[in-house]
Structures are given as C-alpha cells and as structure tokens.
Image (cartoon, rainbow, N blue to C red; front, side):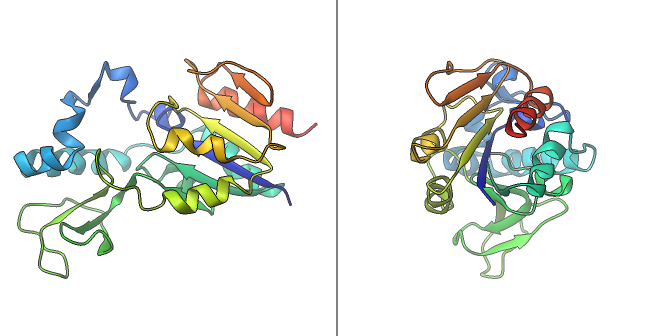
Length: 225
C-alpha cells in the first residue's frame, strides 16, 4: 500500500460547527489568542484559561465528524494513511481514522503543569486545585504558542515517507507545522484543499479552492484514477 499522509487544520472541523481562528477575526471564541493559548496567558489568569478549554471540551460532546473526516477515514481502504493534525478535537478518531498524531495536543487529555510527559485522560472539567499524579496543578494537554511541539520529529519522519500528501483546511501560516510539506519526497504529489488558500497550484502542488467536505471528495476522486 502507498503511504498517504494527511495534514489537517481547523478548516477540516469547521463544517462540524467548530469555529476557526481565522474566521473569528483574530479572536478565538471572543478571546485574544495569547490570553488563552500561551504560557503567559495561563500564568496571568489560570481560571480564565481552564474555563476556556472546559467549554471547548464540552462543545466536543455536541458536534460530530463531517464528510471530510469520513472521507479521510475511508482512504484507509486503499492507502496506509497517517493523519497529522493541528486540531485538538477528536473528530478524526470518531470518524474511524486509526493513526492520528495531534501536533498541538488534545482537548480530552490533561497534563501536569511541571511535566509535559505526565498525561492523563480528561472527559470533564479541569478546575483550580485539581492535581496531577506529581502533585502539580493539572492543565490542558495543549501545546501553546512558545512551547515545544513534541510530536514534530515523528511528523517529519512520516511526511518524509509519503507517496501522496493531502493538506486540508490549514492556513499554512503557523510554524513549525506549515513547514511539514517541505519534507515530502520529490515524487509525492501534494493536494491542498482550502476555501481561501495561501498557495497557488504549481508543479506537483494541486490547490483545490473548496471547503473541506467537497474538496476532500474531489481529491478522493482524483486518487481513484
């Protein structure tokens, strides 16, 4: 089986009702991004940050995977599929995808404030006073701006072995994730699905200016030829 690597961003979950940062005019659910997605924001107002992610976690219970998620999961019938997502939701897994790397963490996990490797499942709220096994305050298992991306090396290794690279619903502006496409082998075609793409078709790069659901289906049709 050929290796198909799928890099996804917020746009793949937008049709499930999860707002994207870009569509909110630089705000995330009404908050400046640095207030709720940086170590400095957490240090300044931990209650606000915990409440923000508690609401995002609760929202996950009200949304479902969309056609894009299911189309990507269906590709496993014909390809060895690895998903590398910038999203912190679990919609890829719920759609049936079996190999998913979360570059920026996962909403349904919590971790120690002192040790990024001390991780546990989390389906409910995290409150001030909730402790990790090491005695430190639990925090969302989210990679905030300025923090290391621990899964990056594994993601680079997977992209470097791709026979096909599919990019869906990401601005290709946020690094280091935006640089992953540069590790794809020279023989691998690259498909980029986004309604407002930051790139144009050229060489082996095919840009499909559509929302995730329709665009991914178009790529599936192209791959079946």
